[in-house]
Amino acid sequence: MCEKPLIETSVVFEEDDHDIIGIWELAWRNFKKNKLAVLGMIIFLFMLMLVLVGPLLSPYGRDAMDLTIAKEAPSFKHWLGTDEFGRDYLTRLMYGGQVSLKVGLYSTVVSLILGVTLGGVAGYYGGIIDNLLMRLGEIVSSFPFMPFAITFSAVVGTKVSPENKMYVIMTILGILSYPGLARLIRGQLLSLREQEFMQAADALGLSDVRKIFKHLIPNTYAFIIINATLGVAGAILGESALSYLGFGIVPPTPSWGNLVVYANNSYTLKNLPWLWIPPGILILITVVSINLMGDGLRDAVDAKSND
Image (cartoon, rainbow, N blue to C red; front, side, top):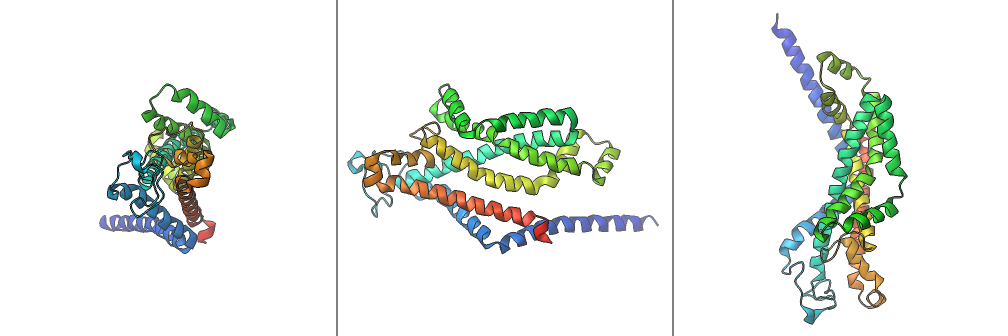
């Protein structure tokens, strides 16, 4: 008599597990139907392989100089030529891609930590806490992004070493971009906290931290993934703009942003196109591919598109 309920309960849990798996399988099927999103994913994976594996296969070092071949045109020996110090430019581009992607990923992580934490707390508690945290986000959002990033980078950058300035840039980009995610998470939690599963969590006496991060936040994973994907593209563009203006990554550390700065020199602009065109193209391809993936993910998890 006691075994039958146990068997039925286990079946219910198995069905729930299958339902959860089915949701992600359905999202993946919807994503695969979007040909542009799949193309974006393939291109982005290729870019990852280029910047991560390429430097390991290159016979040249990142900062290896040979002034006898300075500003050499592209050849079979140096596929994208050399810069003014005789450094292999393709190798510099691949290492610069590592830096740019690292900035994008790290700043997105900072944005996710702040956005999920503050948005989750605001959405769960509401009231005064909600007002304070959301007003804080509105204050951060009110600052013009690029002027504030330039000012903050210029002030703080003088107090840190060039090697550590990259992490300052990452943190700045992450802080300035968190309010959008925080508002999104807050809006989702305002409705989720009224669901029946939260009433069950209250009856079990779970702590607020467990309710927020173990039961509420997991229900927003789809939105977090989409925001993170698009956030990486925005951070790469932000870093590129700052580095191009001289307030970002400092040479000799290469990044796609500070490699495009060669276009500022009129002689280089006219006679040495291999020094400024390739980094611009790589930024364009990477950002477009990430945006295509983000759009595909958004459509894949959208409930209306799954009907």
